[in-house]
Amino acid sequence: MGNLVLPLNSSPLLSSGDLAGGTPHLSPRGIFVTGTDTGVGKTLISCALLHAYAAAGYSTVGMKPVAAGCESVRDGLRCEDVELLRHASTVQAPLDLVNPYAFAPPVAPHIAATEAGTTIELARIRQAYLALTALAGKVVVEGVGGFRVPLNEHADAADLAQLLDLPMVLVVGMRLGCLSHAMLTVEAIGARGLTLAGWVANRIDPEMASFDANVAALQQRIAAPLLGVVAYEAQPDAIRTAQAMLAPFCGEL
Ligand SMILES: Nc1ncnc2c1ncn2[C@@H]1O[C@H](COP(=O)(O)OP(=O)(O)O)[C@@H](O)[C@H]1O
Ligand SMILES: [Mg+2]
Image 1 (cartoon, rainbow, N blue to C red):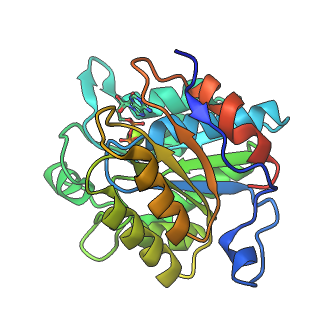
Image 2 (image 1 turned 180 degrees about the vertical axis):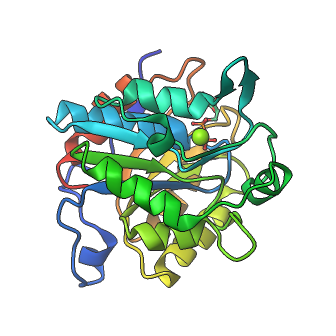
């Protein structure tokens, strides 16, 4: 089935700043992809954004500041998200910039870091991000878990987003319970003074009842534009997702 995506918004992308009458972001160098939870499609949409930017003529690099649940291999750790992002990037940047922190246990980042005897430092992530901006025209930063997942004793992923000060894309994993998660995340993004550039409805549960009504409920409540609706696919494909949905917005994001 080829209907991976139903493009819903044919107007040029407006940031929530535009909608609120604030200062719009003008083609910033990076974008921060957050989600309503872990496992909702952040990596898929981040890879799609990378492909879309590349199709628009940008050099690109994906960044995964913190990866947990990595596989131990002979010469270190293998992180699937990092591999997918690198595969979707046009620039092959050093691994320690693309992924400053990698952990084997599939647990919350600050717990994984503690177990590894280290501490996640936001300043190190920012340095890596800035180094990446010197290597590529667009940097797509895939967030960690949900928007408020702790990163160390004091800071969480929202603090990281604020430190990097990038426009946000929210991936809503469409399943029962996602409406509240989505609205809480939108509220938290606004409370941090960050711009929600747009959101994506990603159908991760093919059995979700009243799917269209759920998307409509969010569309009615989220001021930022709906960038597209990603259908459930047995084999999700980031290039198809990019072609069908995100490319038209790419120049604006
Ligand atoms: N639209 C979709 N249809 C089917 N499977 C999907 C879809 N989006 C994501 N998935 C799958 O769900 C899992 C989690 O997606 P992923 O992008 O890794 O989420 P996250 O980065 O938020 O943890 C992956 O196995 C991915 O292939
Ligand atoms: Mg991921």
